[in-house]
Amino acid sequence: MLWLVLCLSFDHSHRSLTGLTMADNILFITSNRLGDAVLSTAVLAALLDEHPQARLTIACGPLPAPLFATMPNRPRLIPMPKRRYGGHWWRLWREVARERWDIVVDLRDSAVSRLVRARKRLIFRALPDSAGRHKVDQFAERLKLPTPLMPRLWFSDSQISAAREHMQPEKGPILAVGPAANWAGKEWPMDRYQALIDKLTASDGPLPQARVAVSAAPNERQQAIAAWDRVPEDRQIDLMRNTDPAFAAACLTHVDLYVGNDSGLMHIAAAVGVPTVGLFGPSDDRIYAPYGPRTTWVRSPISKAELIRAVDAGERPLPSLMDEIDSGDVEVACHHILNATHEADPAKPGNPANQAPSMVADQS
Image 1 (spheres, rainbow, N blue to C red):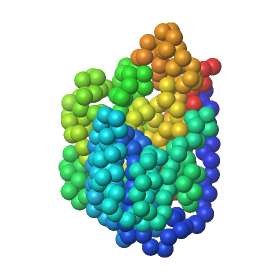
Image 2 (cartoon, helix red, strand yellow):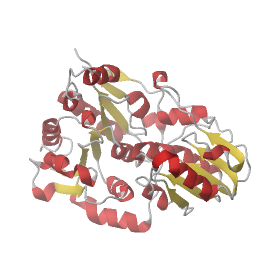
Image 3 (cartoon, helix red, strand yellow):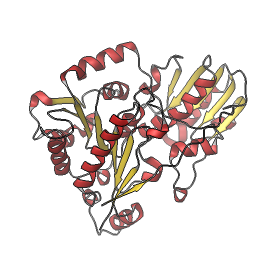
Image 4 (spheres, rainbow, N blue to C red):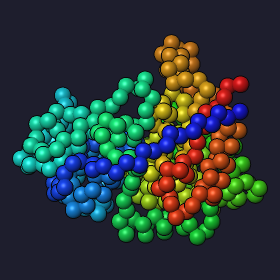
């Protein structure tokens, strides 16, 4: 049985984002983690819509940096690999302290944003997890931004061309799966991914004879390729060899459905408008569910807190934490999001009214 949780409606107010009529020089400090950086593009997109002429400087981790490299403003990027004793913050301050900024947006609540000259500061401090607010909604609330906010990614002509050549969408439908994660406890059992692929791509399934793209980081390849065990080689698409998340994002624009664990790639799929089904166990879907007009998710009936407690107490091994997510529930979620996508107005891909309800697996 599935409990359908209706999404909150968006506030369509149109007040000014920053209160400034002109901003030529903007510093944007965002996450070193891929998923959080993708979600932060909701703030960046709103900022650029209000100040399209602005020069951007973006400070972020090395992994998500390519996502920002092809923005239309050609931003200056400052990758921030972690250093001992917070040395990466000292390096960032030296890079930006000499300039006078019109706007500083700091999504990491760092000292740097308080130690540079700025006309306007937007400093984000996350709500406690107990508040249960999605990260994008927190951005809007804590930074006092007009809503709706929506993550957005940007691609160059060469990326678009290379992605089309790699994916060859003219050959038919594509199912993408993300069976890996940065922590073993967040990985749904591989045999269930294999069974789901069989059902979705069967001749009577919603994506008959679809090719199957497997997405994962290069270091996760050995575990992720098992998703192809029952997929003919001519129907396999490899999204694991290229370490550039921007190229993976451009490739995912050609996908008909994405199913994956809670990961940065799941957030990328949602951000580019792909019908996305996220799977959650020991991570908080209230804060990190896929966010966008064509998203849904299925979570374990066992709470995050209980799963973490059981692991810490030695009562459960890490690979078992997603076991309670039922394959049938995930299959129903896939059918639901595909049907909702087909019924939605394709001329309005950013319309929050097209958001699918979330799905929570019931233990009964």
